[in-house]
Length: 207
Ligand SMILES: C[S@@+](CC[C@H](N)C(=O)[O-])C[C@H]1O[C@@H](n2cnc3c(N)ncnc32)[C@H](O)[C@@H]1O
Image (cartoon, rainbow, N blue to C red; front, side, top):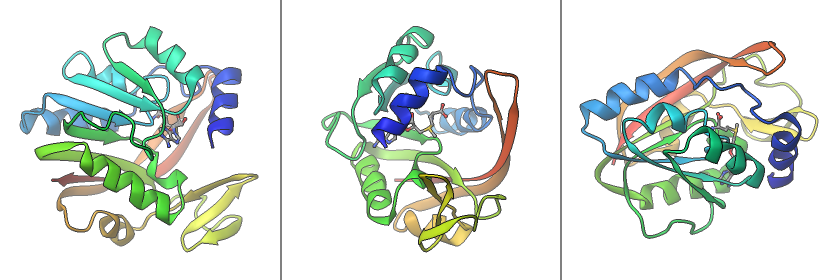
């Protein structure tokens, strides 16, 4: 996966433009209500979402791609970016009041999805929140291409994703208190003025 993202950031730079996901505004509202001060953003990319948080909260990002981090360090100078995998023990000793994880969970097969969630839980204070987004089973790409695992499809050549039903998403976070789940249409704005839309789900849980 590292190669895939490294190549994309090297060739396309700020792939989805500079605007953050609309879900960041929703997350900010909820984080403020819960008096959140520190946030970790796994899979922070080039910082388009961290920048929405970093003037309000103290933010750390974990990102696999060196190229993305180079862009991020210019774009969002208030966030501290760490290069590495959230699936390993990176940043092991620090704990956060909240985690915001945008569209990372669906990129993995079942064992890694569980590692991602349990590694995130280990980085949380008590009490704390997690806000995760992922592809929805209501998205038009669900069911397209070869099925690799239940609900996981190679929907583009050499690219697979897991498409979550509401029940499946809740099941991934079993044991945690679910504060809210929902579904929304996300619009991506590419550099060449092209837009694309897809359906995502989000879940907010309390630890
Ligand atoms: C779909 S992109 C989303 C990027 C960013 N959240 C955004 O929307 O602008 C997924 C990101 O996760 C990163 N990534 C993939 N696997 C990772 C891992 N194991 N640890 C940390 N980052 C990872 C990729 O390099 C990529 O930047």
